Length: 288
Image 1: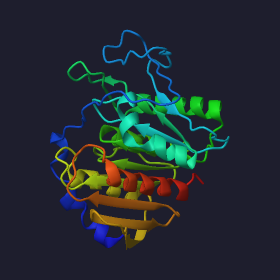
Image 2: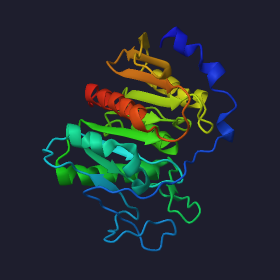
Image 3: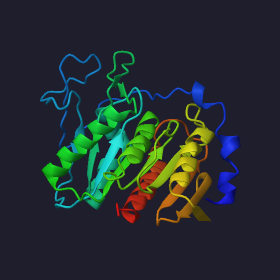
């Protein structure tokens, strides 16, 4: 681990974690050309879309670009608290990137009801049951579309970023690598069986997941990939801080903090820049 990274452990991982709000307001439902919405009809936070199909007492959405071939990568996108698959699909930008690069995106749903102002919303407990559910969704989508099992990647926002870290930590035999935005505190009591490349993105002015908490994921994955050395600037513009570390197992850890911003998933040019960096990380780090 680079000394400049490890010196920040005590100072950055302070008392702010316990007081955090791990939620993000739900957005209006999005749309995909192929969607599977599945869960029981009596869930109080459920989005009642025509053609809902029950699966594992939850629902998910999947985007499959036209012309995608067997052996395509899969990106598993995990919504934040007070949100939903349909709430994030239309605003995150993964579908457009998937159309460009011919990979599949699946949006699973959390199991913790978090309705807000009668708007359907869910969160993640980030426990073993959530990990099992996500793995089952991956298996179902992979079987249906012939996904490359070595190229299943995780992304998430806030509570969904926390969930992504938990899934990668406990199931590195399923997930190749991950990249998250404004993640809630990283997992504890977890020891992954192999090193996993990880990217963490944040905004300097986020009032919910403050910078030291997001940086906790950098410290966590740097430790699990240790030693991580050869710190390099991440390059680009519009960033307060941008760094990359090479790790001994051939993995990498990436950290990028945008100027200003908020807790919301970025939009416009910043969103495009972030997604391209995430996708490049995924391309560079299949499961060994």
